[in-house]
Image 1: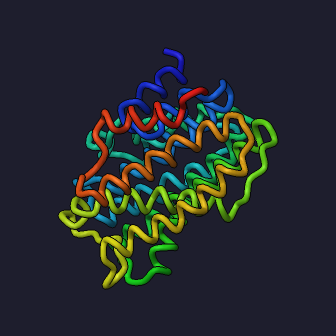
Image 2: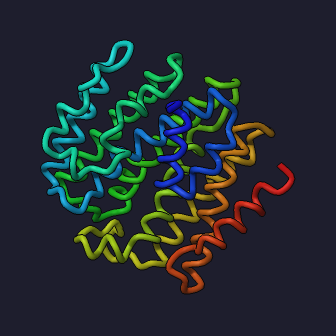
Image 3: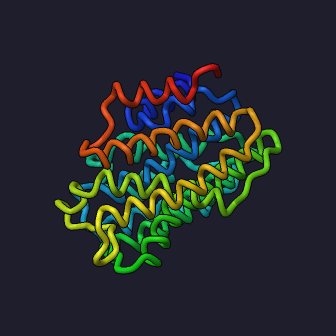
Length: 272
């Protein structure tokens, strides 16, 4: 099967937020963004895995990081599976197929995606070892940068690589932070059940809402500066869903329903 077709199927199964904006991208950029998303989803699934202890998560994440750092013009067939060892059977498909996602990227931008994924895996390993202890807003900023703000920077590099689109990198970090903050709010109850609390000490739900909206204001500035094209088309959808999710939670809903998501996407993409 053509790898991009397979990748989009896996993407459809793992993310309702990013499947639609990625599938709308032109070829070339589509492979690059899909590669980046799936590589990072692969390590995210390890960070959040309910059956792995924190030290095992850190070990697997650092092994992936080192494998990515060792790349020259690709990866041996068993480059990642050797590190997974006996864990392959309990890891989701998106994780144990990370080699394929890494190879999906066009060769002229692939090393940037490998670098970003390696760095993120190292940061995730640190947080796993420290049980995601977030006491202050600075801790929260470090975490949201490490797992999301840095993704904003990567996307900015992908836009430049594809068609020269320039962006404000401070706003790019805010974009990633804002989306991650919304995820933290949406998943707060589930995270508490597994013994993890991303809210700084003494923060209320309203404090986290304010943090998310402050960063989403930077995301607004980021998208407002984009001209019509693939970057703007891509960014508007997750940003619209983030605002929709915040508003739904503020009105007592736990998350957006599927029909809510489809309605918001239709609203954002109308006329495109």
